[in-house]
Length: 154
Image 1: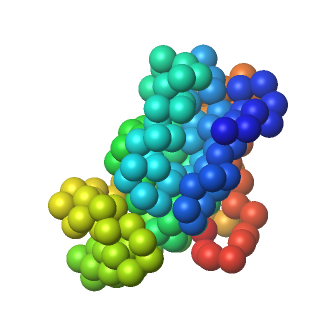
Image 2 (image 1 turned 60 degrees about the horizontal axis):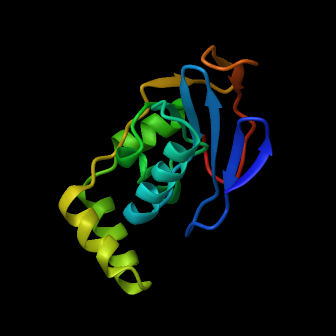
């Protein structure tokens, strides 16, 4: 884990995604989640080493599986663009099967087994649209979530 600024951290060593954490007086704001269950638990332990406070929010930068599957091991309310909510609510057992097959064929059979048994997708609870912003007042300074576009919708 690398410290970018006071109370702002990034982890680039996980498979498939870069994740971040902002430690605030009211809890941690995470940006994306690790793909693999073991890595999501490791990230949560790293956060716990920084602060005893819980994860308050998880911000999804898009709805791609490599950014959203680890939320169940982090906790917190999920924040995302409304297109991410639309995409994720349409996920079905077919997604679970695709993820399991991908992991099984790419050197992560333990993760595939765990996801088969216990995957619970954390759907966004707070959403924003293209021209809107959402300010999380848990932080000082405040954290403002703003859609900026990217490779995937949301």
